[in-house]
Structures are given as structure tokens and as C-alpha cells.
Length: 494
Image (cartoon, rainbow, N blue to C red; front, side, top):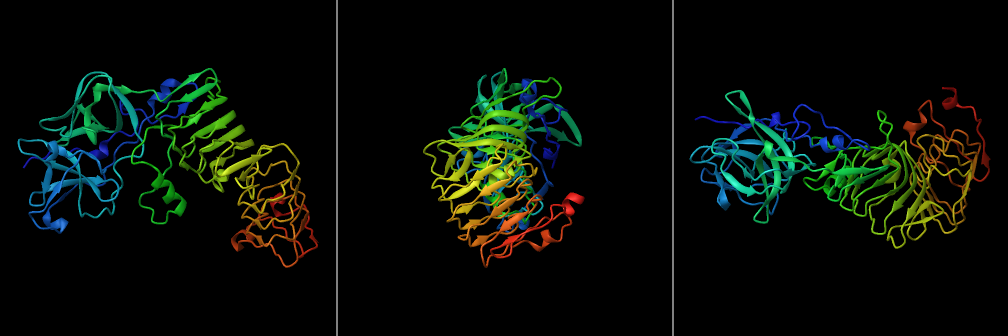
């Protein structure tokens, strides 16, 4: 029995419509480059045949076949498609939960592709569908099909001007010979108000621009849901809780744009103003890179802010909208990689945050969440009423935060992990008697610190792994007195 396989491993890594080009970043001054960015394609991890025996079910078991791996998907074959365990079919890969991408034969010829919920092991299989997609606009009337081989039976006809989301591209292979002229795009659309992922002829569509530039202002269009993308290893069994939470926040597919480079080193063009849409829900790693922004307003509906989302960027004012509810403790420190903020501004009415003099606090004012590393002041008085200095609140990767002295208020109860790490110019600090919780590594890399006064009975705790490092800088008072240590230390000598 002749089989015509769609080798999904041959899906294009790069532009859906331009073969041979790698995925490109969206630079501030190059609209064509922005339009060229596209998803990484759909990957196949071993095509294999299944049957009633391999599935461990009765031969008369039938599995409905759908056009997408979601609850509201349209059913294939006009609502009647199903595969029988009595006849072999082929597994092409997996998606999420218990959905499996399959290829099956139909009467009259042809090999359709669809999604079924099968009792097969997902071990060794990665998600076929990427988390990002490229919007396309049809340039002519076109038939979409779930049978790009054999009969190419139309499942849906769309008129010119319709928009779909490109998920990847395939070549048809038959007897180990490729036929590039039969290339199809795998796209996301709607069939009778239900989700449908179908095959569209490659020459029937063109990319929809996701952004445009006016002078030094770059506008990311409404509808874009992600800049860059968070990267996850589907086979990593040791992913931390934060990563799992981030993954859960992302939809199965989304409209995404590549990294935004604020400075174009070749043309000299710069972007000083970046307008992000309310539709944006994810800032992936290196979403915004290399340059300066006078003001950056985070999207109202942001659900995930990845490590290094903003890399090597100087920001005058970082604005947190009224409806913004993403937790920012620790997150801001990790997401701003080699970047600095001169002032934070939380819009009035935000349920989680407030700002005073450019410093970010919890809405009740009891927790200092983040001090702006780009502030030029050499002294700061933490306001009365603050009970906690959050983890990484004053931390500085570059060790060049200008603060030399910091006054902590009576009533302060907790100093978080790495709260002052990397305050490389800090000379002295007195911890109030009310502090009962001084977290690990609160003062690592405070290489200029000469005086640290601690309350009676309170010791600085640290991670032994840090203490063994040759560049470790650690300072401890003597339970109420003042501890001293020479400025010259191992870190400076190396």
C-alpha cells in the first residue's frame, strides 16, 4: 500500500514565504527585516505507525479527528472524520496535553493530517506547533485543505484579503523525492466559528506588517502578542516553578515579532520611543535590546516578563499602567539585563504598585520592590513605614549604582536576599534594631563597604557556596557594634 508522507522535519526554520532566509530580528529602522521575521516551524520527532496493538485498545476502537488541538476545534471530514484502531495510521508528533498529530488515509486516495486524542506515550516527542506564528493576508481566493497530498480536497475557501496565522511550512515528499512546487503553509483560521488548522498554497498569501516606524518612534501593531519568545526545553524535567508558570500563561500559538533593536549600527538610525500594544502578553528573552528609550510603558495585559527581556537598554522612565498586575518582585531585576532605569512610575489606581520619587513600592507602601539603578543620587532615605526591602531591591549587576549611603527606617523588619548585592560604592549601612530577618547574601559584592552595623543577636547569613568563591565580598558587624574590613580584598586584587 503506497504511502505519501509529509516529512514535518523538513519544515522551514525561518520565513514562511521566503525560503533560505534565517529568522531575522525586527530592527528599528528596517521595516523589511521586521516583516521577514517568522516562526521556527513545526518539528517532527520520528514518524511511526500505530495500531490497536500498539495503542493497547480493542480493534473496533475509533478516535475522532479534529482540525486543531484545542477544545473548540472543528472536526475533520465535515464533522465525521475518525480513525479506526483496526487500520494502521501514522503519528507525526505531539502538541499539548494528550493531543497527537496524525496522518491517516481516506477512501478515494489522499493522506489527511489531523489531531486526535490517543493513548500514546509522548516520550521523546516535542511539541510540533511553535508558540509563535506569523500573520498572513491572502492575495487571492484560495482553498484550504487538510489533504495536501492526493486529492487536495478543499475544507474551506477564503477570499482575497482574509488573514490567517502561519504556523509553519511543509514540502511534500514521495518516494524520497521532493516537489517544492507543491509547498503548503500550515495556517490557523476558523471553520464555521471553530478553530481549524489547515494547509494553504504557499503562493496564496503574503506577510502582514507587524510594526512600522515614524522618525525615532517605533509602533508595534495591535494584535501582536509577543516580542521575541521565552525559550523552554520541553524535555527538561527540572524546570523551576517560575518557568512552569510562564509556560502556562502563554497561549498555544500567538502573533509574535522578533527582537526590537533600538540602534541600527549599520544605518545609524535610532529609536527613542517604543509604543507597545495592549495585546502584548509576553516579553521574551531579548525582546528590546541595545539603545536608549526616554519612556517605556509596559503593556497593560502583560502576563510574562522573561529573563533578559530588556537587554542593554537605558530607560529614562519605566511606566507601570493602572491595570498592570504581573508580580514584579525579583522579576524586574532579572528582566533588566545590563539595563538601567532612572525612574519608575506606577499609574494612580494600580492595585499592586505605587511610586515615590521614582522608587517602586507595593501599593500599601510597606515593601520597597526596586530602586532605580540609573538614579544619580549618592544618598537615599528609605521612607518611614517600609517594613521590607524586597529581594534584589538595590542589586546592581554592573556594580555602579551611585549610592554611597542609605538610611533605613525604624520599623523595618526584613531585608531580602541579595537586597544590596552589587552596591559597589556603598560605604556604610546601619541596620535598624527592628530587623529580625536578614536574608542570605544581602551584601555580596558590596566591595567598598567599610561599616555594617547590625542589631544585637542578628548575624548575617550566607550561602556556603558563595563564601568559597575567591571573588566573594562579605561583611559582618559584631551584634550591635560596627564591623570593619579593609577596602582592598580578593575581588579587587583579581
